[in-house]
Length: 109
Image (cartoon, rainbow, N blue to C red; front, side, top):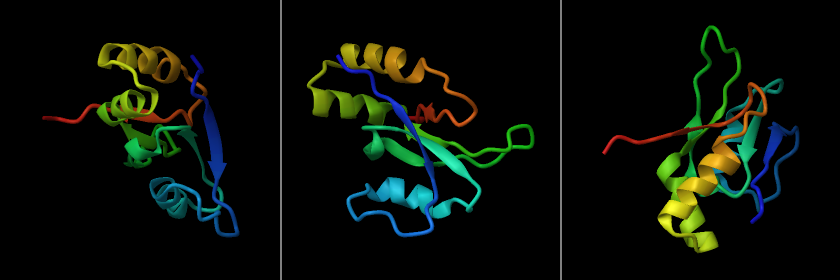
């Protein structure tokens, strides 16, 4: 099984290619010229938004819907629910790659 990697993104001066996912594009459109965010590749459908800067944490991070990420793994990769949870928790959420590491949220029912 392949491990999903993270990739840093900086707002570009020129427009992104039209093949970029609309949710990813919406995030990059919100960034100032000196801001950088990191995305979890392969989970664009589960993007919820961009965190609000906090006093102690002067960076904003991309926020994902945890259940949406599970659905991506089940639909795209054919995983069963339990397998998708284990894979996501270990291979994606279990990795800290610095202060730009995205976060996942569990939604209230």
